[in-house]
Every structure is written in C-alpha cells, then in structure tokens.
Amino acid sequence: MSQIDIKWDQQMRFRLIEIIAQWEGRLTTNHLCDAFRIGRQQASRDINKYLNLTDREQLILDRTIRGYRPADDFKPLFTQGTAHEYLTMLHQQYNLEETFEFFSWGEAQSTVLNVPERVVAPKIVRGLIAASRANLRVDIDYVSLSTPDIRGRIIAPHSLIYDGIRWHVRAYCEEKDEFRDFVLSRFRNEPDLMDKSPKTREHDDEWNHQVKVTITPNPYLSEKQQCVVAEDYAMENHKLTIFTRKALVHYCLRRMGVTLDEKLLRSQPEVYQITASSDQYL
Image (cartoon, rainbow, N blue to C red; front, top):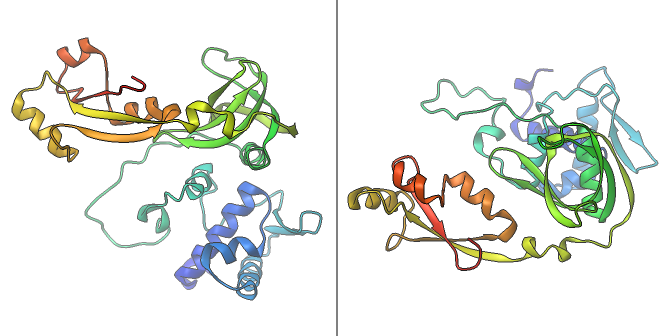
C-alpha cells in the first residue's frame, strides 16, 4: 500500500508511532490516545495497521517493557528518522512544512531555507530523555572544540534546549560542579544511566530565574532607520521588552542578531541593527 492510499489522519498517527518507537524505545496505545484523543481500541487498530504495512518486522511487542520497541533493523516509512523530528515534537514546534512534508501540494509560491541537521544517535536521545524524566545521573562520553578527544562526563540532565540552530541538553555537570549546556550532537556512545541525582531542575538558579531584556534599535542608525527597525519588531517608544530564562539570554540575543559591542554597533550599524539592555543580567 502506498502512502497516497492512506488517509491523512492515519498517516499522522503512523508518524507518531514511528517517532515515539524510534526515539523513546517504547510505544504504547497511550501515546496515540493522548496525542489524538482517540480510544484505546482505535489506537490498537492503528498499531496493528502499521505492523501490517510491510513484511519486515518493524516493531516488536516486548512484554518486559509493556509496549512495542523498534526492531534492530527498523526503518521509518512515514518519517525521516531524524532526531529533529522527535525533539521538535517534544516542544510542540511542528509547523505546516514539517507536518505536511510528505504530501505534494503542487508548485508553491514560497520556500523555507533548510540547513543540514546535526546528527544525533537515537540511543543517546533515549538515554538522556529517560534520565531527565527520572532525574538520574548519566555517565556519557562527550567531545567539544576545547576538548576534541572523547572524555567521560557524569551529568544530570533536566531539559532540552533548541536555540534555533542546534539542540542542547541542560544538565548538572559533576566535574565542573555547575549547571551547563551540552551540545546534543557532541555526545558519543550509549549513555550509562546511574542512580538518582541530588541536583534537580529546582537547583538550577539560572534556569528558574526569569529576566527582562529590553531590545532597542542601534543608536548609530539614522532616526528614520531606527523607526524602520522599531516597526519591524512592533516596538513601543523604540523599545521591545522580552522575558526569558537567565540561562537562555545569550541564545535569545544571538538568534536575534543582537550585539552589545559598542565598536560593532558604531562601525556596522546596518549589520547590527538592534542592541539590548537589562538591569538584571546584561
């Protein structure tokens, strides 16, 4: 059966089946019931329909986990099998392009710039998600530009962060004795889940502290240019106030193209069109 013969709502449920099975490693009827507000019988029928789509065994009923797990040779049929699909779903950031990417709508009069995604192994995501939900310590290998050789880290993850370009894990680092952000694509090998961590999300002060940031046009633009920028962001009196977690301020400013560097503001005002201030942080 080709995808064109499968109803749209059925395809959406098949997509969820694949994403949850591949990236969490355990699929139950509850996933479908909660996501689509359907009954358990309908959810069971959907899973059975998916299992019958191909002769290859895609999902295995594993009674030890009371659910289905992906087969070792699992190959997604309705999704691309990327970590981005799962992580985006977690944050409920699906847009129309992602939701309908497998349908042909004819020639569109718009386009979206897509850049290569950073590769993340499912086994790494599964382990970090499980540890985050259960507040567990994790022994996992990590690389960075400052330390390009693989090194083991013991961390206690609590949240995922998408900065508009790449995904991070917010976690307590036992080596540095502080909460830090780790780039998701730079973890290596399968994580080893350990015991409970005494450091939880509630102990992460920068995560729990909200700050107010004021965005303004670059003062070195002409008055008319500043008005243009102010209208771009619907500023009031040339000010835009945003609230974010203290731990995320630098991501927010970077994504908006904000600089606080006086030399850059003065020398390249048309490149750095906005700046920011905050009594609490900057």
